[in-house]
Length: 270
Picture (cartoon, rainbow, N blue to C red):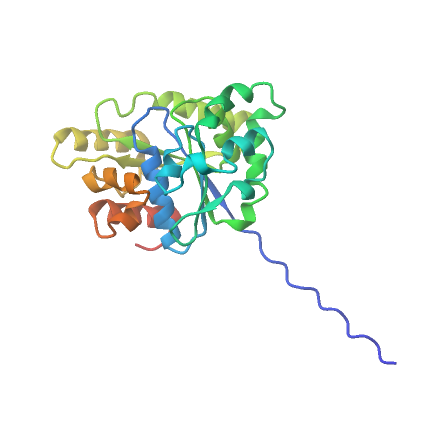
């Protein structure tokens, strides 16, 4: 009887160095969801496996990717409040490599319902910990507030990306946002950092836009991305068709700008 062949251990797959990016600005209407959808889609187009987490009760990131919030079996509300696995709530988007954990209006009650919940600030972090090996990039579309949902996003994220509109009062409220990032960094998530500021809604025809851009660059230096997102009609139209701009109008100025931004954020060569 011959000795059995020694078993060869299977090679260990290396853990993905997943980046979890909270897209945040407590001001409404500054292009958070537009940036989340289109940056995520452009990164997926580059070959990165991307998950978008819709943490805004309005569910605009979900509808903007063609998901009907009314027809969901599970949403981020169930993930945060009822311990449903985030995998069970995740839908594949029409773009290859792009996935979405959707939201609906049920999430509006989460701010209140989370208050007495055990480990309330860490619910999203715990949910995402089970899928970190499945994605290269996770983008969290935060609501326009600094409540418990945004705190959950900051506690789960490795970095914060802030869209800033190139309009009057662009820097208003940013100080409070940065203080909250600092608070979360000191108390909940020491790995969190402000990584990128993105200038959006840029209208090259106005002096104001260039003045705001210069002011933001003066305040934040190298954290401000070189790529600037223009204000265009096609960018505004794309969500109503449930498509990112890279699918809706692949050759438009907005599409080119978000592709450039994706390369900058992911470190791909331009």
